[in-house]
Image (cartoon, rainbow, N blue to C red; front, side):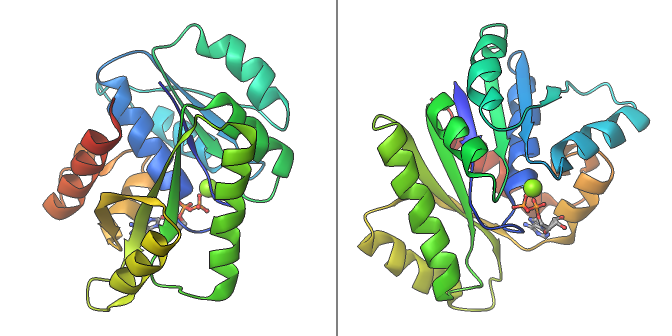
Length: 209
Ligand SMILES: Nc1ncnc2c1ncn2[C@@H]1O[C@H](COP(=O)(O)OP(=O)(O)O)[C@@H](O)[C@H]1O
Ligand SMILES: [Mg+2]
């Protein structure tokens, strides 16, 4: 299965979602993590992971840009059971290439900013996904949710009006996610925040086919 984690907006949790998904997939099969973001955050995570050696399975990480995400990505994908693309925010060629390569697009979206700009970005990605790959399975993941507010509920209403499939799991704003990434790890491996772990495991079940 080839997943693309996409949004034109930065800071929504694309990289956090992509490295968690790729590392969870690595437990069940050979997994490739393609860092398609020029900012190379997933590649930084992989470098930190090499600095803190672990017995836990790791995805193979590589950086690709623009069209190469599709062309080289397709060739590389043949050697792996699972592929996850962390698509860059603004590079539209890279974003489109990721959406062409993938079978499932996961769109992390922050529920705390119900502003019009974020909405336009989200709908742009969905439109691109459907134009470029009509059979693509598009799923929205609410991330960085503040459980004390009604933002997520309002967002769910908006998303259902747009006829978008929203994953049942919501990922809350938790320090554990920031810490895990900074250590080249995932929340399961740190083992400190059970709520964060439960969210990631539930998300994983929902996107496995
Ligand atoms: N669920 C979360 N809880 C707390 N911090 C988060 C969460 N998801 C992401 N972050 C933090 O927010 C920032 C942006 O997340 P990141 O995954 O890099 O987003 P993107 O790749 O979309 O730019 C990072 O500092 C990351 O550690
Ligand atoms: Mg990122």
